[in-house]
Length: 265
View: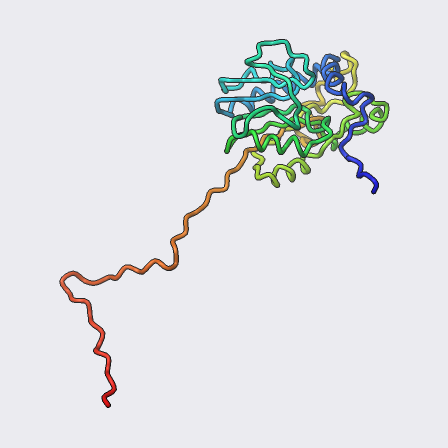
């Protein structure tokens, strides 16, 4: 029997180094510009999310993404395995097998994890397992419904980052989260400039950001989605066999049924 092909396998040149490649891309001119806007959006969104424990999955160098969070205990799970920081804040692991006990995390941040994982469904199942009831997940992704997708089709086949990833539509992620019982509470789009690497060109095209947010807001190169883990509460139902309470006026005797007639022989 022919083995079914995984549709989410990336086209990156060396799969095991995909996370290292993404980290290197963030150090480019374009990557730094994207990172600036992602930090600004997370500053706004994370300030409204509360709890005891926050987990950032992906890159130990992105601790600044959590700078405006009000969650006291903030941790980073480094996928690359290169974290050499305080072990109380940093640890290593895989996004589809998070080494954290169930129902223990209040907020989880996934920056471009789904489009570079070969197992995005398993990643979301791990999010569902580890989040507490009413916990939140914050997902950052590259938008296939944007100018960025043109660059992806042109450069993705060469295995270049980040174009070799599997860009996922917001509507599909909404469907996946809905099946797991999550409710999407916020969606933001960002970076409307074309994904060019020249610093001078990026600076001259800053005006496109203002136009894009007003004219075509859903066509940004990236998006941030916030979803809450809903809990189904059970409504107690009174048993139907419970006898009805008799209502009798005070001081009155309850009427008696007439005597049953007997048949005499």
